[in-house]
Image 1 (spheres, rainbow, N blue to C red):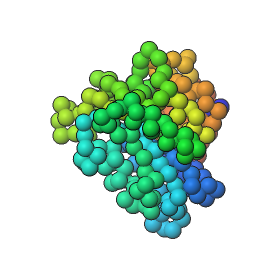
Image 2: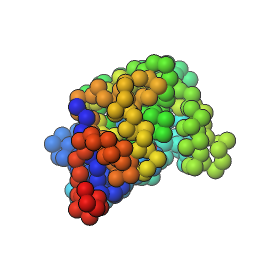
Image 3: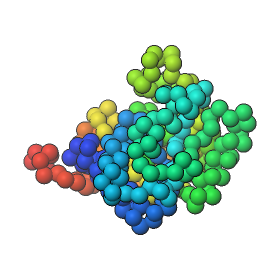
Image 4: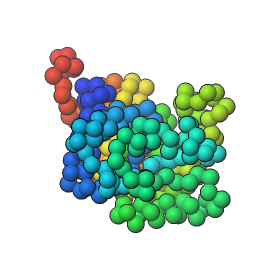
Length: 261
Ligand code: F6R
């Protein structure tokens, strides 16, 4: 079942998702999280770091599996997704290095590495909670629009629109890696719970299409319609199409921001 949540703003979205994570970790201190990089989750990671600083959260038994990593970028490079996660979350909380997992996108035997990553997720008991952002083309992780859903972790060629969107994070567009390794749809759909986060008007249309139209590999996020416990949470701009469509949207902390709604 899909639950649609509209928060007052992006920061409130961060607090909503952090609340869900805090409740999970309190109930299950060895929770297994699937985590994205990108601009959208930064508000969540900031909130988690500040709650850890306030003594509210303990990550000492938490395990994390990141969604993806670029090929051809050293993990210590400032452009790597591992570096992003260290900077925004892992260096600020007490997670153990051995509990942090990424696919090795430059493994010599990539097929074996992808199978290892899927095996590690399964051996951890699967993901208790998967956080996702959504690309402008409907990608989740780096599962780009294509002719079929790919179940396992795999190497992908990034689409032109993804390369263009991610160019903002690199010194020059030509520096954006063309390939990456991503978790596949299988481990994602096996997650006990999923939260899709989105902020900003530019995501409203694709988000709506993903959860309103038909399920198809040309719009990878549409597969999430088939998940039993998927929440879509966004700020008013990102949730605009849902709000205007009459789909049932739950408002969180809505006292000042929706005018007469
Ligand atoms: C990143 C990832 C991507 C992003 C998506 C949205 O690890 O998996 O699917 O979630 O591209 O990125 P932002 O949040 O930067 O708009």
